[in-house]
Length: 458
Image (cartoon, rainbow, N blue to C red; front, side):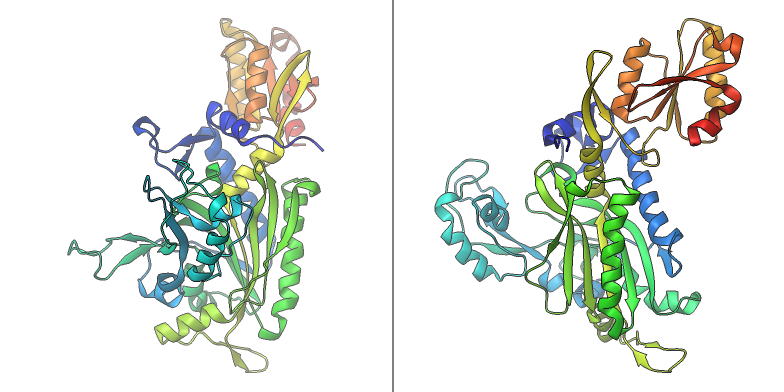
């Protein structure tokens, strides 16, 4: 098994090669926020496309949705976020740094679950107090732990300048938009229970102490699917989706089995029947990548209760009415992005040199093919290379590169993760063929231009 890269190696190549930039960097950055650069934007797009293909295109009973980031504030009251969506915060009395208490406990060798009360977390914190130091100043003088609500308030439609009146929130998760449109989808499409609604979209959480690079952000993107099922089939469908989601990472994304595992939640929220996480071996250890949850009928029941609108489903065959139960799969684009960088980061020796290479599968690679003229100061080579680039770019995402010698261009494309490089040389003008170099092995083959598109796709 190849060595897992360090987080410093991931951060370095992501910045150097235009995958990830710190947000507002010229102003000193903004903690918990990052921007995707030219190659990062392409990689993220390919991650979304792979998920959407497997979840919507290849499934017969799942449809897509794109709901608004803002909703009526009552939505978040009904979902429980206004009253219970919080993290335990503790403040250093010496430097006033605020930290997540459960993270400090974990680093000291203890454990605190998000379902524990603040009193229980205070008791655990007291047990490990002598081992816990402020991450900023190193002192051990802490306040009592308090709960801090993670919803981000906004003033959309509020012109009073008093945000305590009629507060509006940026959504803390994308699934609420799915629940709100459950009835609309039923009424306007031909779906029948069991069916699913999938969505990709931004969510926002006022994280106390964002950390671990893009693993935990304040503005992030979720890919979620909610499957609405008959009450007595919930656990049967749940096991089907547990198997499908694990298979997706291994077969569709190409992750090694050694880098992915299941983790069962020990303490369930009161309405859940089961909750398992798919964990990935990130540079900082195994952490949650995706959650697969059996949520019962809690979500639709809550919105039915608070809105006054019936969200029951009538079975067209039996005529029986019921509130569907929900099987949920939820994964972050950003966490998948970090997992993909980690999985396919590699170093090896090629041609006597040590190189860094991102061995992305073809469908995830930001750039599929790079086209080079052998020399940039030979107009005939540049013109022919441009001609080939124009031929290929309508078929796949390509890049034209004439900067530096061929060796440097190869290394640059290796670090971007480009599977193939096409070089136009003087022979091309005679034999109407090009040299195609394969990223992983460095092997080079002479391919007729007339066969180039077919060969690269194959």
